[in-house]
Amino acid sequence: MDGFDFLGWHFKVDSKGRFKSTPHSNSYKEIKEEVKKTWRNTGTPDKSGGKKDTETRLKMIGSKVRGWRNYHKFCDMGKHSLWFLNHWLWKKLRRDKVKAKEKEITKLLSRKKSGRIANAKAAQLKGSGGKVKRAAKRILTDSQIHLAFPSVPHRVNSHVMVKGAASPYDGNLIYWVNRESKKYEGSYTGNTMKRQKMKCTHCNKLFWPGDIVELHHINRDHNNWKPKNCVALHRECHQHQEVHKERIKDGKRGRAA
Image (cartoon, rainbow, N blue to C red):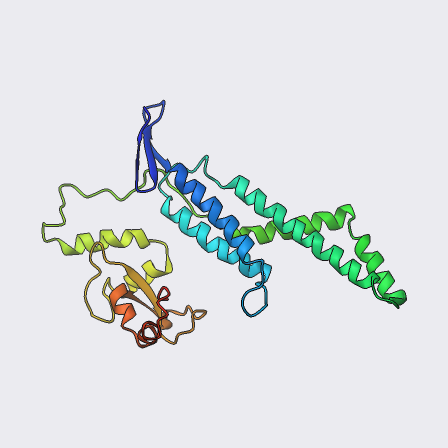
């Protein structure tokens, strides 16, 4: 059976009669192109003339990969681990480190009066390719690459099943509100929603199925994740917060946070 495509997934029945979904080939192609594009574009100087440091670039990629993996977390990801993309970026990262070392050596030796200290430093850099040091650098690269490819647990066909003959039109709002919250389960937003008893703190209304819920930082500090500084709001309510009204007025319609 060839299967069919729907919402970025490919559905088919495998040889053992199991119904499974996998990321569509176009979706897989798009994430690869997006990762490569982000790495290349952030490596060039911006308008201010500065470059983003390596850690920032890797975190930007990590944000895209995490979102892609979360979207496909109920798919069979056995053949979509992004291993080749991970290895491509790993080699780029190692190459940049080697280039940085060669540049430092050239800079030291190009001085007219380099002196013994500069020559000794250059010799030290040239001789830093020993097995132990090379292994240490590989470990460092391995630890950095995890920023770009954060792991996201996936469970094949673990969608939340509708209970019995329940219907969105049967008047059982509590059941459907709790069911809707399952898609935020395990996230900081989901925990905040539970703490608020599934109600938006701005309009004091329940989070209905289909509502988009966003996390709002009260004091505008996005590094402050303390419970008293974070509230879950409807997207519409979030945009009515003072800081976001100012952004919209100024024409900066970036995603609310």
